[in-house]
Figure 1: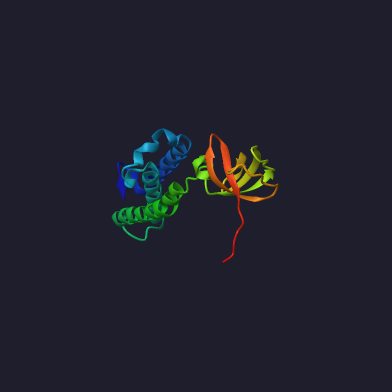
Figure 2: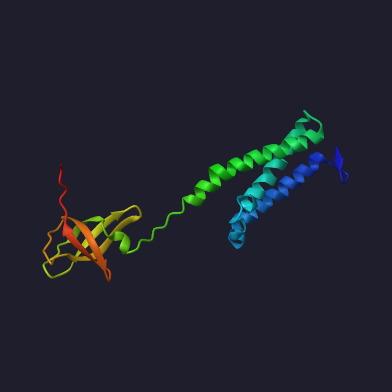
Length: 176
């Protein structure tokens, strides 16, 4: 079958090449159009480009193999492209979007955490506590909550945080 004087195989190949180039450009400059697909996922540029690329690739292969008439190949390529781009959206893009992890923490989020004393805390003075989090180790200035002295390598519980200082108490795990 010919369309605009070109065979359908050539059209699928040209569309595949341009969609592949557009995908590469989107990878490098995609932040400029990041908010386009926020409302409806079907308008996400990644989904649209994947559909065009997969449809043209499937259409090219089906035309090359020539099992069916060209009209059926176009419909089959559209169905294959839609199914594969939907799978790409569900199993790649959605998990990547929800996997946004920040290494930042707030001082309020340190309340209730357990830590280890690495610089002894004197009574009415300051020492240092290290807290292990998912993003790494956090070392902060600390003082006793009731102005008590706390020795080195003691496990402590962060009771509250004020002005960058952790107020801690000794913590002993009690078995019931």
